Length: 112
Image (cartoon, rainbow, N blue to C red; front, side, top):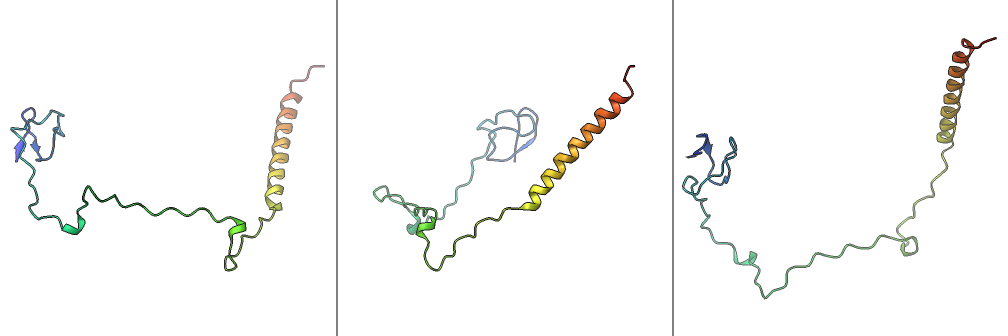
């Protein structure tokens, strides 16, 4: 295994820089990466004269007027009253807390 000339750390053959000190690995220290000699299957080759395969087009979104009989449209969303009541309770509660803070802090500092 090759070693770094700067910090003497072990180097992998494919590394271009030492991971320990960051020094550039010289070509004399790095071993060549072995090449797989097995040939590529002829069916996987793409020739320059053939056009590249085109990805299928993504279909457009379904619009209500394009629905077929077997597709059921979504039901309209109901108004959620409990959400509105929760928001109102929160706003009224915050207003009461602010009123109590103002009333309690100003009661002790009143001058006759």
